[in-house]
Amino acid sequence: MIPDIVRTRSAIRTIVAKWKAAGETVAIVPTMGALHQGHLSLVKAAREQCDRVIVTIFINPKQFNNPEDLENYPRTEKADAQKLAPYNCDLVYVPDGAQMYPEGFASTVLVEGITDCLCGSHRPGHFDGVSTVVAKLFLQTQADFAFFGEKDFQQLQVVRTMARDLDIPISVIGCPTIRESDGLVMSSRNLLLSETARKIAPALGREMQAVIKGLAQGKPFQKLQKMAISNLEVAGFNAVEYLELRASNDLSLLDTPSQEGRLFAAARLEGVRLIDNLAVPARP
Ligand code: PAF
Image 1: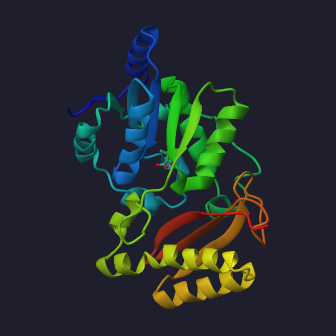
Image 2: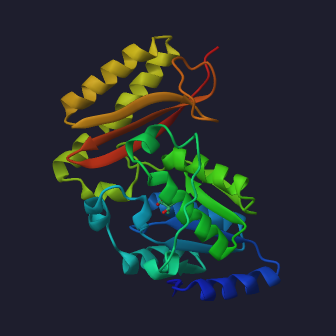
Image 3: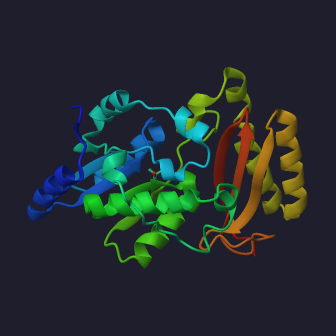
């Protein structure tokens, strides 16, 4: 069944209060719409673990650095609600700008430290926007569980830190990245790639796999990193913003996989920003 759409804070609060009074657990899956299999896998995980599932759709202006990027972001509300039909989602919460940021709105949630690197340093203010909107969604829905993809691994860690530091009583669950058959990470931004760029895009993940293979063979990271960046530029990526090895827990920079790590990359292809990250096992 196509889930109902709820558009106001007061309506969502009333519905959730009734569910909770009946002893039901409530999950949210925060999204900006343009739903794909990655989002749907989060809905499925939420469905398996909770009694009630809310998908939120809000294209959050505060997390975009570039007005053009915000303008071009796909808006597909009707199709999104239809895609949710087979997943037994209870409702879709679609607040508008006035619900989220009413006139006079003056607060920002800022998570320090972990936001200084990777996407945080390339997209100033991005994670302030994410933390602010996600804190609001947590508080507005009063959900018990929130499901996020590991595709945005830094976002997942930022949200975990924010919920912990602000004592928001919610469990943040990370779910594995979902990929297309050629390895490209599923992302709403893939819709913005031309046919040619779409064919080039999986090179990002392939080069990252090659780095991880090299690390497992004991090759030095800097050499592998240089080679991967050069290969990506030859393949047609305009700018590799970063390709870095970091610790999974606190995102501190590593130059060898001395502990459990992740390889993170962001690169632009025809102006579309693609990101990926992969687990890197610790090598004694
Ligand atoms: O990952 C996203 O789609 C967004 O950053 C989120 C978590 C929905 C906040 O706007």
